[in-house]
Amino acid sequence: MFRSIVKKALGLGRDERSVIAVLFAMLFVPLMTVMAIAVDLSQFLVMKQQLRSAVDSAALDIGQQPMLSDATAASEVQAFITANYPALSVIGNLTSVKVTRSATSVVITAAASMNTNFLQIIGYSTLGVTVSSQIAVNQNKLEVVLVLDNTGSMSTKYGTMKGIDGLKVAATALVNTLFGNDPTLQYVKIGVVPFTATVNVGTQYATASWIDNSNGAGSMSHIKVPTGTGLITFASNLASAAHQSSWAWGGCVRQRTEPYDVQDVAPSTSYPETLYTPFFAPDEPDCCTFNNSNPSFYNDYLSDGTSTTLCRKGFQYPYQKTTDESNVQNCPSKYTTPSVKSGDGPRDGPGNSDRTISGASA
Image (tube, rainbow, N blue to C red):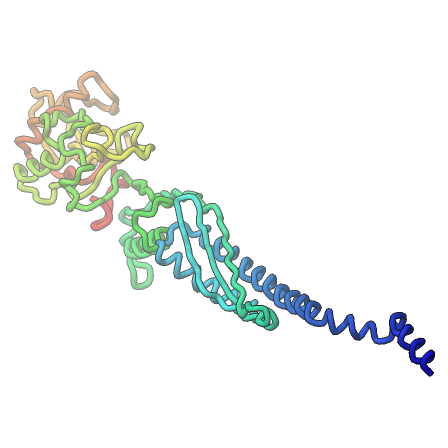
């Protein structure tokens, strides 16, 4: 019997039954920990990918709208991510959004967190993620030129509205659409091309720094305007002397002197050629006819004087330039001591096609 007990005792060292159970009991906690980490980390990676997708989309959206103010851009990014991220994610919660903008780029940084299911057993109740996306700002600049019809035909009514009123409404809507809420937007430039001869900027700008108030650009060299006297003052003096109040400057300006008429150089009093010249239509001669089909000059509003003065010389039929032509237009006496005839005065350009309706151009 003793021998039997000894034999069984010696056999215990070679007995492999229940080894798997022992090993499983020993490895259960590590295995469960690995599985827990795998489950929570897979959800973490999904949350990170969904958040990155929402942030990238928001950056692309804002990058195409450089005209937005910083406050509006931040609000739009917040709304964009809030609307898109929860729609994709059932895992994490959005915790913060930050927008950093410069003249060339937009950086959006967002953070989210998730509650863990298994990692809590090793002390991690939440996992957080922060993603950032940077994109270059769309810097395409837009230049628009408006050629607006302000001739007499625009006084025609179309339905209940005059053509010129409809033009103003449409032009205003276009400008507001392009500039949005920023009237100084650097990405949009709008120019106005005179449809006839001038653009009416308004008489309130008579003393504006960008108006040539001294005839410094010499734009009216064909009239001997006194040195330092601008055309606005010249027209005002003529209107007073002729007792024609409507002859005062009506707010119209011509294009700038070449080459500044096609350049973006800012007006400067140091360079008179960059300033805008007030519009002034010279008196046309009353000595002759313009051509066979036009029996007289259209805007002959002053008498040129007697046949013995230079104001009568320089024009002949058919109309052609002669050596004395400048004398007719240069003669200052008919403007300083005017003898009124007919015509529409200095506020109207030569030729009936250049006449403009009230309120549209002077």
